[in-house]
Length: 388
Image (cartoon, rainbow, N blue to C red; front, side, top):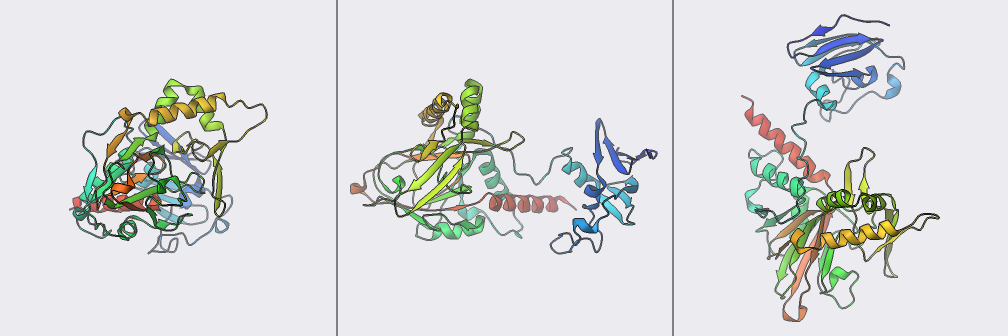
């Protein structure tokens, strides 16, 4: 064992090297930093391309038995030398952020589950926001996206009430992703509907396109005309529903997590099939999405696996998410765009009478990385304005 004398810096970090690895201590927290992990964080000249900041070296360029020779905490840097002769000034704050010791200031806010309509409806005036990533006034954009990440939806107001607007708005927020209804689709009552959305009947709370791989992340619905009586929009927080199910019926919740389900869109001339789970979490137990669409789902029958808890949990979710007390009901006016997280917010609509007025929406999908990128860059601009 090789042990160096611990080195302190003015920020309170303590560094020691044991067996060629850095032991970093700050307060009551200690982490052992692998030499390869540290070496990969080097941004010295020749290590990264300066414009895109991507590495210019590969794993095979690094000694397999690489070790740290010396490491000293100096202010906000770790002055580190490796056995391959490379010396790097590593960002100590970035390392502590990667360890989870300090928050990432650019990280979007966590979801705030809601079980009843919000006290203030999250309307956003489209004309009040600059979506230029190099703009000087990021505050309105940060506030808009913060509301979306917290609640799972916002509604943009005062966009042009004309066809094609939703695509232009989507291009400001991310990149449109295609699906089996095209890049942009028209939601109207049609004589031969390719989906129940293209009828005038009530639509219960649901996720869109659970059969796709991957399931579209964010849906945008733009109101062009809404003259028919009825046709009000509904939203409910699927994350809040999942939390409530887990608290009240953990066995039913487990069944919706564990039972594989097939979703099938099949009208003869078009078919899309995907498999997954009604409730999905990552390997660390973090919620990722809910897929509720009872007009398209079928659990996979496994030998020896009983479906009682699955069907009980599925029924409970349908009752909870369609309880008016848990929903927000509102009317989309021409120029409104509903911007909602399809992995969280379940949407629906009341029935309407197409013989008494025309109802025409246009929709499309983008993925989460678009708003995530916009938020991070806007926060970065905010922080830069605070630096003298």
